[in-house]
Each structure stands twice: as structure tokens, then as C-alpha cells.
Image 1 (cartoon, rainbow, N blue to C red):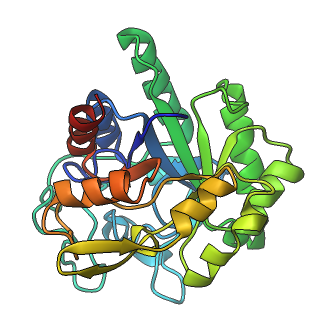
Image 2 (image 1 turned 180 degrees about the horizontal axis):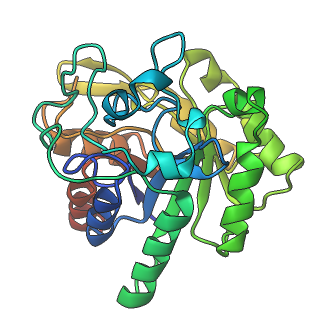
Amino acid sequence: MNKKIVIAHRGASGYLPEHTMEAKAMAYAMNPDYIEQDLVLSKDNVPIVIHDIELDDVTNVAEVFPDRKREDGRFYVIDFTFEELQKLQVTERFNPKTGKQFYPKRFPKGKGNFKLHSLQQEIEMIQGLNFSTGKNIGIYPEIKNPAFHHQHGKDIAKITLDILSNYGYKTQKDKCIFQCFDAKELERVRKELKSELFLVQLIEFPEETTQLDYYATYANGIGPWYKQIVSSKVEGEFTFTSLVEDAHKLGLQVHPYTFRADQLDEFSTFEEMMQVLFFEANIDGAFTDFPDKMVDFLNRNLN
């Protein structure tokens, strides 16, 4: 990977409800390098493309199956079969307690007719589009909360790797990047499950940024929060941590998350955010809810 890559975060999730097939098709048309799939197992071991182990902040599960919540008041993907999950409507992300939409300017909550789908269904659509368009857009699956799955007697890593292998994603040459926040599980994917895929270690907490030497023993890249790269802004000038430089010295690619045009924080514009991280901090790729904007930015600035 010698170019800077664009990863469609949960599809074109800035425009359509995240992880719906429609959001993936729209993302595909925007020409990113990869489209992301977050994965959680159903009761009958089907990898469902959804961001969390719970259902109630992106679906109408509380209306359809009101009696299926657990003691904590939440509804879990793992308690439903694939067939049951098909009965739910997917909507724009909202707070299950208040019902309030998370990103107010995005697709209106409760509108449209969106469904959950499996990893296999999404792969078949992306591979089908690769065939019909002649493009070669990759997939970027993430297994969610493997420890939770193990507690329920399920091996999400093995199930997912077997499916990927069946669809031709086996080595670093194949357009598939496999990611996880759980370092022990990702190490297991490489060493015990013997995967030869390009592996990215996701990083959430500050102390994890000091473990790059360990990550480099099994992973090919890291996926940090972008705020772990940008350290401060003084009089309009940004300074950076040593994370990208340290990772590059160990041969690790750096793909931070998540670039959102409607959540800029310390940046004055989305262009500035991309400029600062891609070219000043020298990242190798990024996750974005707005793949069209990032593809356009890199096309203008790299060519």
C-alpha cells in the first residue's frame, strides 16, 4: 500500500443509515479503496453487519420484540436468529433512552425501509459490483467484542475468517483488511488461526499507543483515534504526537478514525482536517463517514 487510502466508515454513513446495504452501495459509487463491515454474530452464528452487540440504537427492536430485552434493558444481536433480525427496520443512529437522533443533520430517523444483512450478503454485493464495474474495491471487516462472543460460546474470529476465505480473501494480496480492538484476539488471528490477511490493530486508550512493538509482532497497521495523533493547536498551528512516526519505523501503516464533516472539533473545516492529518501528520489512510469528500480531496491533492 503506497498510496493514501479511503475507508468508507460503515458505508456512506454521513448520508444513509450506517451499515445498511444502501449505505454500502452509495459508498461503492463514491470510489473509496475499502468499505468497512462491523460484525456481530446472531444466535445462529451468522455474522451480522452492525456496529454494536446491541440492537436498540439503530433498529426498532424495542417495538417488534419488546419482551426480548435483557436485565440491563438492552436488546442483543446474539439473542436473535438471522430470520428474526430480518423483521427489524434499521434507522439512523439514536439514543435509545431519549429517542433523539445522534447526528441531527443526517438521514431522518424512522424514514425509509432499511434492513440488517449478513457479511456474506455484503461481500456478494461488493464482489458483484467489482465484476460489473471492473473496479476492485476492498472490504475492511471488524469483529466486535470477541470476548463477549467467547463468553456465549461463539468464536467470531474463526467464523468470520472461514467466510472470508470462502470468498477468496486469504492473503495480504487480497483486498481485505481485518481489524479488531482486542489485541489478544488479533494476535490469535495471526498466530493460532494462522490468518495471512493484512491485520490492523485498533487503538482506543492512550496507554495502548505505547505498545507498538508488541502490535508489530502480528499486525500490519494500527487504527488509532485521530486525537491520538494531533496533540495540540496553538495559534492555528497543529503539533503532533510521535505515533505516526513510531508506527512507520516499525513498518506499521496508520489508518485513524473517524473523519466526519459534521463533527470537526478543533478543525475549522473538513478540508483542514484532511490536510493536517494526511499531509502534515502523514497518515496512510482514514475512516470517513463522507467517502466522496475524502476521495475528492485526495484526487485533488495527490495527482
